[in-house]
Length: 460
Image 1 (cartoon, rainbow, N blue to C red):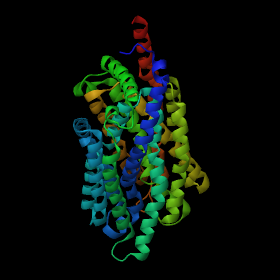
Image 2: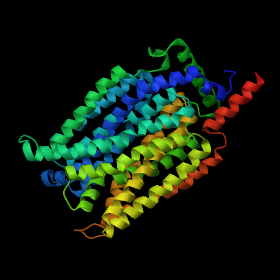
Image 3: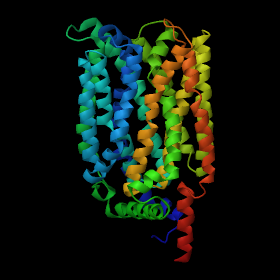
């Protein structure tokens, strides 16, 4: 254990230099990986109408297929995390990207509901472990006080994916429908965007580095500074956090944050999967380039919200306050987007959609700062995997819940889409209460690290 205080360690010019170099080297590749991943898991929203017309995939089958991705994802999440620990991040993250890219490209050959559902399940299986693997990777490279800012940079992949991917998906569909004889627009979209993931996976193998000690771009002093500060954090985690896989899976705090993350994913995917169709309804047009461009607007503003709030959330109190307010904002914005859209106020509805996207995007980096502050080793692989896998089941529940509520409160020919959105808006309020309740975790995150380091430094 270093005898320096937390403040002295983090203020070290050598450490600051190491963090700066590492973030410039690693973050672009990580963002690219998640841009393509988020694009490939959500581009199905652009093909929903075409799949129904061309392949007879009903609204219910589409909702089930869109959601079953998360079942495969949940089943293989923890095994994938453990494999990443064994084989190293660069090889395993590259494998994940290449295999999910091949599965995503195979959607071009969907023949009906069965093949669609099977491929969605396989997409979840092959992508399992990417997101928590990157979270673990960042937790191994960067100290906790820096982590929310870097999580926020990583989370920029979501708005970038939709900002770039929405027009790309719309353009590929329009191109295929208008000028390509051997494939429809939706087939071209799936194949091209799937192969982008394969290329990203190959690049990741050459750009990522497993640990600071393997980094040739850091000098000996910079490696030592990172090693010392991360060793201090790991020692505190070992003393205060669960030890081993089973202990992590039984830990109450792990399950607490799983519920929070589940509520967050209900909002994220409940909005994201149907956003192109919702925008098409507001514009009174079919899905294409125009819808893609308008769909990109909320994600454009989300970039600035996510990054600025991530930088501001640099203390435990700020994280708790901002997280609570952002969950409330998410629920209110989703409900108001439904109400204004149902009453013909289309421009105002788009404003509230934008507010919802900005809010739930900004919550992600804050929510992940908590479990990475008390989990390490195999406990981190299991705990982070459990939070992400079960939390992501919100992505399975959201489209089915939205469709079921919309159908129940509508008619056979005209589902009540507003009612479906109202249902999605409820769970963010539960998450807000739970986020506020994190104040009872007295020595979590930065506070735990700083108090214990300073106490030990005073005794040494």
